Amino acid sequence: MAHEVTLIPGDGTGPELVEATRRVLEATGVEFVWDRQEAGIDEYEAHGNPFPEATLASLVRTKVGIKGPTTTPVGSGFRSVNVALRKELDLYACLRPCKAYEGVRTRYPETDVVIVRENTEDLYAGIEFERGTEGNAQVRACLAEQGATVREDAGLSIKPISVFGSERIVEAAFDYAQRYRREKVTAVHKANIMKFTDGLFLEVARDVASRHPEIEFEDRIVDNLCNQLVSRPEEYDVLVLPNLYGDIVSDLCAGMIGGLGLAPGANVGAQAAVFEATHGSAPKYKGQNKVNPTALMLSGVLMLRHLAEETAADRTERAIADVIRKGEKVTYDLKPRRDDPTAVGTSEFADAVIEEMSA
Ligand code: NAD
Image (cartoon, rainbow, N blue to C red; front, side):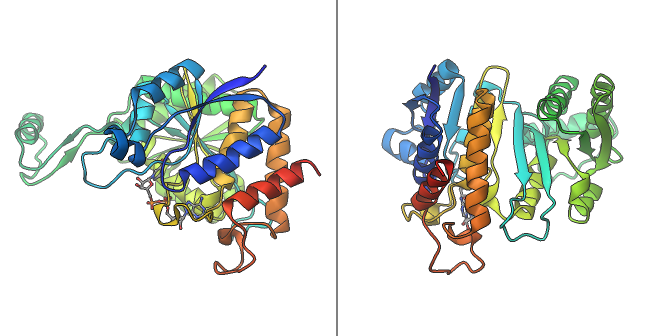
C-alpha cells in the first residue's frame, strides 16, 4: 500500500534537497503519494503566512511529513515554522542519530550516538520577560517575596521542566534503544546546579530506567559529557537531554561526524512525525545545486523506518554510505578540499545513490 506523506520543500536550499531526497526514496520501490505543501519565507512573502493552515491540516491528516529547512529571519516578529510545527503537532521528541560514516574526514570516526532531545519545554518554552517591562517587574516582585533578588535591569527567561515532559522523553529514549537494539541510555543534565528542573529530569529518568532493566542506564553532567564525547565517543550510545542541552550537543555531534550536511533528524509526537535535517536553509547556496543532501536523505531513511519499511531503509542507508566511502561523486563538503573541482552537485549526488542502490 502506498504511504501518503506530506512533502514540504521549505525555502533556501530546501527545494533542491527535498527533490534529491524524493527521487532516492522513490528509487527504493516503496510507493508514496506525496501531498506537497508550502512553508517558509517564500510562502510568507507570497501570501503573508510562513506556515499555512493547509500545511498543518495535511500533516494532521497524513501523520507523516518530510520537510526541507525553512529560514527564520532574526529579530523580525516572524513566527518560526519549526517552533510552530512542534507546538501545533506536539512533536515532543527530536531524534538525531549521529554516526560517522567511513570516508568522511573526522577526528572521531568511532562516533555512533543517538540524541533524543526534549522539544517542548526548558528555556525554549518561550516564557520571557523583557527588561524594563511591567511583566518583568511583576515577576521580580514575586521573586523578591520569595527572598530572591534579581537586578532591575535583568531580562528573564523561565525554564519549566515537568515530570510529564521528562517522563515521555526518557520513555522515548528507552523505546528507541529497545527498537534499534542499542545498549545504553545516558541522561544528560546539570542537576548539581539546577536542582528543581534538571534535578527533576534526572529523578524521573532514574525512575523510567528502573522500568527498563534490560538496558543500561547512566547519567552525566552536561559539561562533563561534552568533554567525554570528544575524548571517548565510543562510550556513548543513546543520549537523552532537556531541550537546550539537546540543541547544543546535537551540533557538537554533527561536527564530530563530519558536518551539518550529514546530520539527520526526526521530530516525533504521539500523533505525527516530521523528518528533516539538523541544518538550516543555507540561503547563500540557494539554487546552486551545491549543498549535501545526505542529512535530508538520512532523515528519509528514518522516515522509512518509521513507516516500517526496514528493508528499503537499510538499502538506502547502505547506498548513501557506499557513495560517501568511495568519495568520488560527493558534494564539496565531503572532499578533502572545499574547492575540489571534482565535487558533484546535490542532484548528481542523488543520481550516485540511486545508481548504487541498483548495483
Ligand atoms: P545553516 O545550517 O543553514 O548553514 C550554516 C552553514 O552550514 C552553511 O553556510 C553551510 O556552509 C553549512 N551547511 C548547512 N547545510 C549544509 C549542507 N546540506 N551541505 C553542506 N553544507 C551545509 O545555518 P544558518 O546559516 O545559521 O541558518 C540559516 C537559516 O536556517 C536561518 O534562518 C535559521 O533560522 C534556519 N534554520 C532552519 C532550520 C530548520 O528548518 N529545521 C534549522 C536550523 C536553522
